[in-house]
Each structure stands twice: as C-alpha cells, then as structure tokens.
Length: 438
Image (tube, rainbow, N blue to C red; front, side, top):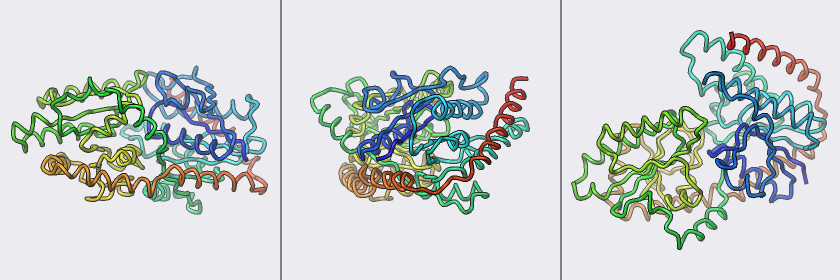
C-alpha cells in the first residue's frame, strides 16, 4: 500500500473539490494512507468528509492573500499552491510515495524535489483558457504564467483529465507536450453517500422553505454563482416557458436556482444580485427561489423533487451535477458541448440543446406537456450512471494508476533541471509582483 499526499488550492464546495475528496476516499478504501494538503479549509463551507474526521486535512498558507485589490487571482493561486507544496516537501514530516496535484501545475517543480514521491497532475482544464486578455497589460501578465503552466504540466509523471473533451483540449492547447498522453479518469459518484442521505431524509421536511406547495413542474439549476456558468439562461428560458403555457399551467411552474456561494468571492455576491435583478425585470420573482449554498440533504431532496435539471454552462470540462441528477432519476437539459456530450444521452436521459432560451424552453415544455417523461428519462439516466460512472470503476482505475507509480523503480534524472526551473520561477514571480505592485 502507498502513502499518498493530495494537494488542492481551496477545499470549498464545488465539482473539483468533490472529485478530489472522492479520490482521497477511494484511495483510503483501497488501503492507502492519504492526507490532503490545502491552502484554505473553512469548516463552515466544505464537504462534510473534510470536517468529520473521515479525511485528514492539513491547511498551510492561508495567511497569503488570494488577490491584490481583486486582481491577479491566478498569480496568487500559483503562489499559495507553491507554498503548500514547499510545506509538504520541506516542513512537514509526511513522506508520500505519490503526490496528486490538483488544478495548479506551477508547484510541480517543488513537488519533484521530494525525496521519493512520484507525481500525478489532475488537469480539469487548461488555466490559460479560463481568462480573457483584453488589455496589453493582461497579455504581458499572462505570458509567463501560460508558459509556466505548460512547462510544469509536462513535469508530472502522469497527467489525468476528466473527459475525452478535456483530453482533446489538452492536446490542442499544450502543443509542446505532443508526446504526453493524458489518461481519462471520469469523476464519479459515491452511490453509498447519496443512498444514505436519501434514507435519512425520508421522514424529514427538507424543502418547506424552498419549494412552494403549488409547484408541480420544478426546474432546478445547481451551479456556482459565476457568470461563466451562464445561469441567466435558466431565467430567460423560464420567461419563454411562461409565454408558451396557459395561465393555469403557469401557476404550477417553478425554478429553483441553487448555487455555490462564498462570501469571500466578490463575483458570487455581485452575480447573485444580477440574477435577482434579472428575475425582477422579467416579472418572474414569484416563480423563482434563489438558494445560496445548501446542505447535502437539501441537494438530494431537490434532485428527488425536481422535474428536471437545467445545466447551463457551455463547453463545461465535465460537469458532475448532471451525473448526480441522473443518479437521483432526475433528467437533464444541458448544452450540447463539452462534458455533457459524454454524460447525457440526448432524448434518452435528457436533452442536449444549443445555449439559447428558445432551445432550452422547448425542452422544458416537453416535460410540462408529458408528465411521464421525467419517470422514463430519469430511470434511463440512473442506469447510465450506474453502468458508466460508478465509484467502484473510478476507485479501481485510480488505484491501479497509483500502484503502478509506487512500483516504478525508474530513476528520476530531472532533479537538476527542476532546481534550475524553480529558480527561474522565483525570478518570474518576483518580477510579476513588482510590476503588479508598482
């Protein structure tokens, strides 16, 4: 059995966090010793496995800022993860056989200086594609970060990606890494967790304050309050549905916007206000409930109650929420791009649409006009998740990957090169900080 360290920037609530927690749980169940190292862990805003003793969490570097006047988030994410890596390798007494690095590759040169550990990098999506470059200053700021991301990603012993879509984007983006073949490891669900919660809520009235009693057609959106998630699409689609319904049917139609919300994140706060304003402008406030963060019990209850899920992001790398919905027999309406193309079967477990209110509202009307559609598509979705995205399959593949690395006796001859790169990184970061600060 191996000794495993997992490092992640911020153990909040989101798809990336859920995946990394499931990875740690899977490896523990396979007999490995696992610790998660992170720069931030708030016990009031995290998954319960990270605070109830199920997983061992070590937070280091939370004293470092996340931004400078709400700018340079990427730079500080790099710095915080580099510090966490430095803490793991040089300060802590933990000596892992394998280190799984999540999201930020810039810390891999530090991790490669570990006495014996091999490295796995989980690439959810190239960071360089997640930001705009509208100004000359932003382009200059991003150039060394983009180079650093591509170079350091290539230092990992194994790169994992979350979908075939991301694997293709990886090859198209990191052109210098043409010989590196990322391994697809689909995120999964821990079915036991969902079924345990489902059993525990049978006698509870969880949604009394969220779903009104007259609601019969309940459309559900679950996503962080971020503009890139295109949450306004759900609200605009509901307005189109209103135009298609009779007044009697409209009384029974409802939308629940449930989103991850963190007071530390300015975009969460401002976008929440924007969405509320949009709902008011379209005269829909009496048909929409906004939920800011939610418990696992509330999420499972919402998925059990909903007519279908509206999943609005375009080109989402994978998207764990559609998997959760289908497991709970809730059909999905999603954009026909990115991860949902691999998870949602069109007209079998839901509908894949263009990211327009016309397309989404037409799919929503199908559920209103055919009461049996939720049951039939929901059953097919549940079967698909059990067959394709089980926690056992995820656990087995990850375990094999880790064991292969633990048993690999190949000598790592890159140490000297890594030391040079580490020095270059420090110089780059120093220059960037001086440019930004002054």
